[in-house]
Length: 119
Image 1 (spheres, rainbow, N blue to C red):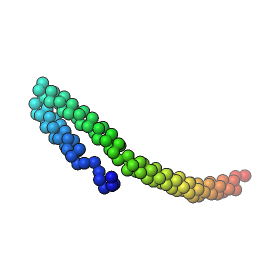
Image 2 (cartoon, one colour; image 1 turned 45 degrees about the horizontal axis):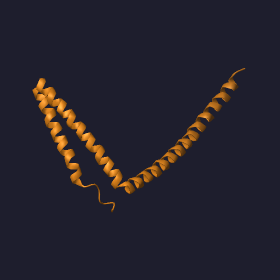
Image 3 (cartoon, helix red, strand yellow; image 1 turned 180 degrees about the horizontal axis):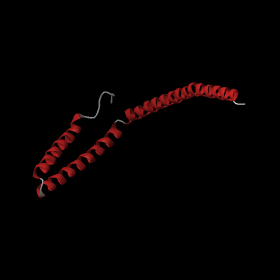
């Protein structure tokens, strides 16, 4: 399989149908606002649970069929996080040395000046 072949778009069509059914049931529940409205709201919740289950199925399918691509992505993300983490530590260290050095120099000057004025 080449990397440009993703999951078939037909696998995502049920999610679009689930969203449309959810919106229709939610709107019907809001319009009815009675006993029948609560039934429609409960049904919309059930539809979303089915959609969540289908997303889990799609995730498992992607993990099994595209494992090489996912492992490459994880390696690349680990390298990026490591690089930017080291860069952040280095910049924070340089900033601490720069600002810390300036503040230490100021405090030493203040101590020297305050020490000169005392008897």
